[in-house]
Length: 307
Length: 307
Image 1 (cartoon, rainbow over the protein chains, first blue to last red):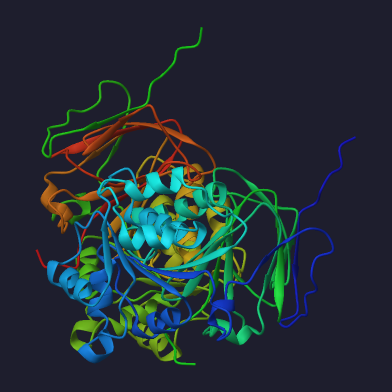
Image 2 (spheres, chains in turn blue, brown; image 1 turned 135 degrees about the vertical axis):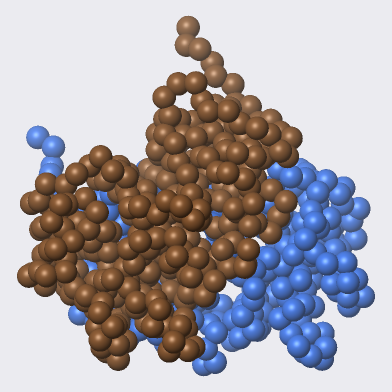
């Protein structure tokens, strides 16, 4: 007889200590980049949406590689009123089909030393091109040289290079993207699509999408432990940072959690049925999610406040 | 031998006339409410996100029932600087668990004649409660009386009433929601979840989610014809209004379109694979989407411009 697994929802205390899981698990530290110490293999990708100044400067200071995807360069330029401050935030690269960047903005950054890489292919978004760039930068031994010196064929030279060059796969890249959410809804969903595709194509890249009020990322199938030093990193407006577990892949997901305000056990969630929104984080040092398929998570976080 | 259906993508002209499909189809007119003539069975639901003044006043003037979901009342109140203007926008109802509405805002609207209906159940979102209210209002013969006079049990009296009362199902309700997208991402996805759930529970309710830059709605399985008088209603910033077809339900969707810039045929789309974003509308009077499962669509539209 098949075992019947019962769905359960339990309301937990507001502040609970969550230990590491006993078996195998993926350890995620989405907020670690905000520490002063370790920024290796971190990149910021700026997309074409209005930027909040405080958020930008925090993420900029916490990442080593800075890339604008096409019109993202306009947003970076417009983010500063004074030329003195603007000239302290010069991206390493601008990449994309370059149909959105203003010519004065492009000239400005080129004068300041930014390398502009046109990639005109319409079979990839500017976001995807920026991700390919970071992969070449961090994962191929001569990638930095290639990106800086070229020559890079202007339609899809970068993509070709990444396909034909051996890449080290052992180091993890943490990518933070600003502007992937909050614009037109098809662009928002295209960014979520990016999370699912990267999970298959490049499991050693962790992509974190930052919005004005939350951070969005993918939890892989299996057990994940999401850790942080203290909940103060969230800077959330509510006592407990709000969160959601969002089954946006193409199937129902069965989840079990530990360290959320409303913990679930064997809980089946899908977009045409029930979805866990307006949940919250009660684990003071981390929480656990077990899922039988990849699932998207968002956590309330506010980097716009000075902290 | 099974027939092999080939995927095709065709780039179309910018302005093409699209005739009605020959077989059975669903006829959708998302922009008809902006006409001066016919506003029957239309409602505006205001959720708890910042409101754009121009968008609000346009949708308000084009709908007959005005409902605030909890903190949505604060946003309505804050939308106007002058008391004279504010007092011309008095909602018929405020509904929800009322944990977000400011007490001065609640008193203000109560004094002006708004009926406030507390529904404290945590098993439904305030958005769902507002939708249930509009259903009772339009689809039950004594619903208006019930909502105005009560008594309505304060936990989930409305939901109970809607379950135990016979509802006319023959008239279509067009619901326009402001603030369902653009906030915390779990709330955005909860609004999309609402579209999928309504499609099953109340197929005679069409829900349209309006954001600062687009309109989001569900296309049912089968053939849909989306019609409009002219593309000027979109008020889009680009020559052709941008759009996306977003397979956010729990399965792959196979689509065929006619009247889009990049028309597809037998095109399989899913969130872990390829998704049609940054497409555009080329049909001057409408376009056709055939889909084997429900799919979410967004169309670029800007109601914030004065037109």
